Image (cartoon, rainbow, N blue to C red; front, side, top):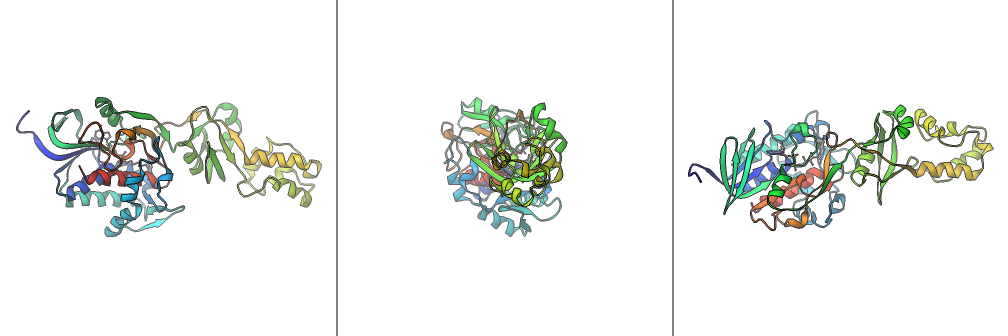
Length: 395
Ligand code: FDA
């Protein structure tokens, strides 16, 4: 081992949300921290998040809004470093923000996500964190310390934190690095798949869906036992929009999803209209509930005719169909369109207090690389902050 090797207390790989957050919390404790990033810039996903305004947390963040093979794992970090703690930092940096909907907090102004990255970089600078970008990692070795060999030479540290995120959006620099390291150290991984991702459909469904591309509707989307009331959006490949993205994280290939297109109407809503509008065609009455394009598309798949000519039972069946419309996606749009990854480093292998690998003292995993996946709406950043903070207390 060369004596010229630079020594740190703590090396963190991946300068995204979790890595930057862990770095300055460790630096504040007086630890000498090195943050290594292979991209030219840090925080690439923060910059594009929330349409450039970064939905940085959610007022309702709580463990039940996260998916994990072990739903209790995230409790400790989320409780010890909450959305309110993150908000204090936002306020300290005078970053103006607003609640868009459902507790989702966004920065104010076009491209305001930059302010979050600036804030994290300022905190890192104040805490004396060294940040090296454009550093590729060749290998990691563990003796009594960690040796991180990079294209610019090796570094040595007491602790090593992997904050390289998940597979979504490879063109932003996403890699499976965390899982290569997991393999090297025999740490189990829960099978990964895209989450918060648009769903695709076979040609037989697309025949009626594709002409609706661009149309959205307020729905309840159900995948298994979980349901979300938000907008669904038809795309040229199937369905997207917040309700569908949320359901996609719970959906497994081969399963169906169920959509309630009439979330505010009872099953007798169409039969009740028969008394007021007996001569009206079903399609016309559907226009009271839906945009014209959607009403036409649904009418083509329901009994045709005037309401007065239909039995109440037929109209109740039609409303039931609209309230429990079963669809079987053929797939999803994959990691190039997914906002998050479901699965990741098996939480049974980690300490829920510190994120340290139980079998490899000194090795930590934080952020999206871990098998904790948030709902849409600022939850995934909150997990990055909470897990980064938890590691930052000990690395
Ligand atoms: P993150 O991916 O942020 O950072 C990982 C870092 O590691 C990156 O800088 C990467 O370049 C680096 N890296 C990877 N491999 C490496 C290697 N081999 N060597 C060195 N460095 C390496 N969430 C939310 O709560 N609110 C929102 O508004 C949004 N919006 C949003 C929009 C879009 C388009 C996407 C794709 C995602 C979101 N998200 C989101 C999700 C959120 O961005 C995501 O969950 C967090 O960024 C995860 O933070 P991490 O720090 O774990 O990974």
